[in-house]
Length: 125
Image (cartoon, rainbow, N blue to C red):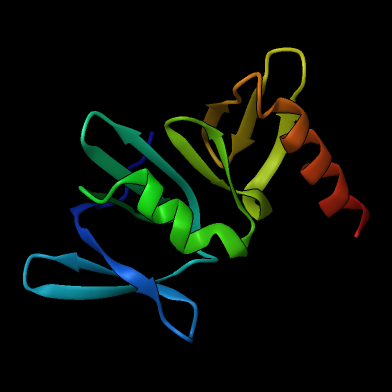
């Protein structure tokens, strides 16, 4: 799905005043703007952070990302996915999934109406 470079990273515990997350890759630190993050997914113990160009794999919990990004229009689509609502292209209401870039993210039944409402509210603004 992605031809971009995959990187293993560890995320910092704060967002800087300039609104970016610090990701650690080996001996390097990378600044990733929260606006560049389109999707965060977790499987087993690994969490993948997707941007338009790159994906980073970290062992930071989805809950930690949720706490860091809650005020930046990120919503939990299901128990394994955190979505940047600004990146949502469309929502399939019948089959309950969100389309972001080349990704389809399933929406849980309990979050479906919340996503529809937030998507409509964002479109109206």
